[in-house]
Amino acid sequence: MEIRRKVLLVDDDPELLDIYRDTFTELPSKPEVETATTGTKALAMLESGEYRLLVTDLRMPRMDGLQLLAIVRRKWPELRTVVLTSNADERFRSRVYALGVDLYWSKPSSEAEMAQFVECMESLLAREEEPGFRGVQSKSLVDLVQLECISQGSTVLRITNGPFTGHIWVSNGEVVDAETEEVRGEAAFQRILRWKAGNFEFLPAEPARPRTIFKPYNALLLETAQAIDESNHAPEAVETIAPAGPPDSPLTPASGLTALMETDGVEFALKMVADTRIDSRGLNQPELLATWVRQSVNRFRELGESLQAGNLDLITGMGAQQNLTIANKGGTDLCVGWKPDLTAEDLRERMKKIVTLWAS
Amino acid sequence: MGFITSWFRSTKPLLQLYTGSFSIDRTGQILATTIPSSFPNDLLRSIGQAVMRTFNEAQAARLSLGELVIHFPGLKITAREMRGGAFIFLTTPQSQTTYKRKQSLL
Image (cartoon, rainbow over all chains, first blue to last red; front, side, top):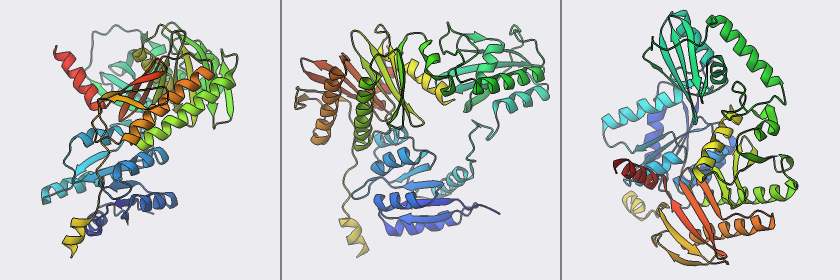
């Protein structure tokens, strides 16, 4: 049975809503279209139903589009969002994209623009929801490597996962080399294949690339799958993101804080789940720090919402004796203490890597 | 009639975020600011108070922090503790991009 995706259109102008409703109803995917004339009504509707796409105006009385989007991005991060506005101020375009909105459209003023808009909306609705690497939806990296190897092709596969970049060299259907984060060979290949989402591109082949991997691709993929499987079931595997540490085993939530403590520059770590459960390493009085972290995160989360600046990404605290960073991923607040000689930018980059690996 | 109702439909202006700085005293009162006056004063005070409370509570938690950087997708807040008060910089992603572009041209 064909699933009709639900679309919610929000605009304070009922006449425009009618026009948009007709337009959306005629899309090839035949979505189920509902409308709301205010942000608060839209939020109530989102609470009560599963929507695939939200299309909203920016300028609305009481709750404007930015306020609505700030709440929507936090509460329904999977929901695809589109801003459709007649606001000509271009400064809002980057602001809207910073909030994590999928598309920013000026209200179509001609038939050609409307046709483009319709095409865009259809493509947004047609996209699969399963995670995958952009370009080939719902395909894992293993599939991509296999595809290239089976076709006896030669290429360089460039993969990005947040702050990380990896390369896999394929020559005449065999994986000959891999590299990421100063790690090369099989270890790099295994590390890259653990990434669950990101972007990839095929670059021209580099036949002169020195070979560091000599196993047939089938054996390589099988061993990698086994290694990933084993590490997922090993709660306290020794894992680190530092180049100096074991190169073939990235940090994961399963590996715990012990692994995090082995990361270069880390002095202490504190993990808090759902405001109650605390786990820490390297701290004498974790409760004291936990209270401060919890208060600070809640305070700045609320501030971000009232400023319509998007969800809180990261807090960095710097002092003469210590530095710390706080981030949230998947309902877990993670506070990491660092040596005081690191700069704010260093701290941000390192924490981003930790969070990416944690999530991956 | 439709024209009249749409003409009189009241929509408040969207909140614009700015790049600039301001200083606050130990009670969170604003002393001086370069942020345009169109930015709501109560929001500016909220930022200042949030920063001051975080600094003060850090001391109570035996953390001696001199600087806080809070990253949002649409705004970066950098606060430096200063004689009991604080100096706060607000940076929007646009201004960061412009600065980086200028740096690369130099």
